[in-house]
Length: 496
Image (tube, one colour):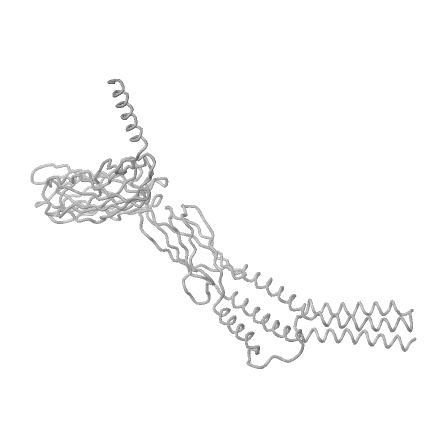
């Protein structure tokens, strides 16, 4: 019996172990650690805290994670909330919060609380972690700030360090130097050391460097290690600290535009030093161009050196107004001047309407060719997470616009010329009737009549297709062709 109980107990232990191995934890997110920049905090400092979070589950991702940091009354939060879209099982991501230590904060350890809310599968969870923020006894005599706070990789930038004497007495013979741990940010044209003879209490000295970051550097926040040696009333002192420098930021774009056949094509290249995320191109309202449909094109991410194309369907403002007038004219059956369309058979009515629309279409194309430039806006997220907008005014490619105009005009000319096919049929019928009469009365002149007929029809077609597609010219050409053939026919009859 004892063996049976023992086997049962072992079975239950194994079953519980298997369930524990296959089930995720009640709380999936694990708080793996914190680090401060600078590493030592004093009253009045502006600092950052990095918090690492890990999904310790085995198969369930964490989505829509939102975090809120509470540091208490001795700190001012510059950035109090952060979010993570997705945290896969076993994956670790970092949250970064910025805050300022108030000037009257005493040395000590202060509690901070991080509250996380997220979704796991179909369930919502909330966790709270606590950690301590250490504030050291203020021993520093010099407060250092740096401007600008961000530089672009690969580009020369002017970096200005401001050294403020926060002590109660003068400091002198100051030696200042800075360095980046991996030498990815370096001064250009000089070494990293500067000297200041004296700084009075409460005064500030500025030191300027020309610096550059490695073009292949990973964008992010880089700590600069500062070291200052100086003399005060207590003798020679050395002070070390850190400041954070953002490498990255905005970028620039090169844009070319081509307008052809009612299609605006924008070629957009990222020519800057940083990647651009969530790129959106928009064509704002402007004189001369109207967008037909959406004025926004979403391009996604555009890394440095990459390019893509955005397309919009457009028409000029003059075209839009004229097209509206054409639609009203066609609906009412009146001419643009308000007169009634001439009566006649269906063919005549279609020809008159087609001519009017063809003439207006040619005018639309001329208006389109007169548009010289277009203004566009490019919205994107830079490498610091800020949303930026770049506005570009781009000259349109006139060669493609004019060639499109010529091709469209030629096509419409040939299309309009097809409307005179009844004149061609009439000429052919009249000529065949004359030939029939000639064959019956005098067969020997048949070849001469055919030759004259070919010349007459050829003249007619040449006028129609190569000279002008206007109906008046077509009518004249047809009449001249038939008259030529008739006169020659009468001459042969009299000669016979």
